[in-house]
Length: 198
Image (cartoon, rainbow, N blue to C red; front, side, top):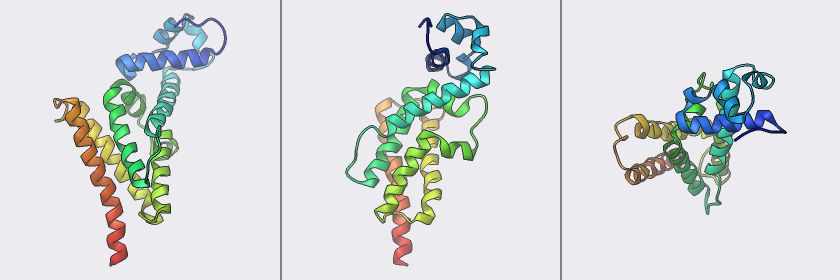
């Protein structure tokens, strides 16, 4: 992908996306991104002062893709939407481990405030807001439910990528992901139902 005219910053981020897909965070370097864009390393520094800045921009672009994958189809109910979002997150992690690593294990781990602004987390909280609007989750529990849902899918993805489920075939990983997601969604809904009945 040689850069000729136009937006060099975008071309460098695109190179970062390609590099990270192939090799995760360690593959994203100014030197290699500029080589792919067909410019000198010095040209990159007008847009990205260092490797960390390029990696952050690459992670932000990947996050947009993750959020799009999580929200690409309508669902009949808020609970179904939430389940689809959870499984899509795991699918993304397993299908694109290099990208997943860049988003969550790049130069520095994201802090809670940064996570709240991330497109994938925004998609999750929007689905939970729909659950609140449907009366299936209390507004007071929405924040805790968001972290519980994310912990479930993120932890499950890690088990498949680097843990005891890494040797399990992809179809079985996905089946188990669906079970885990169904369990956490049922759990956050039933807790509210239990507290209402108490």
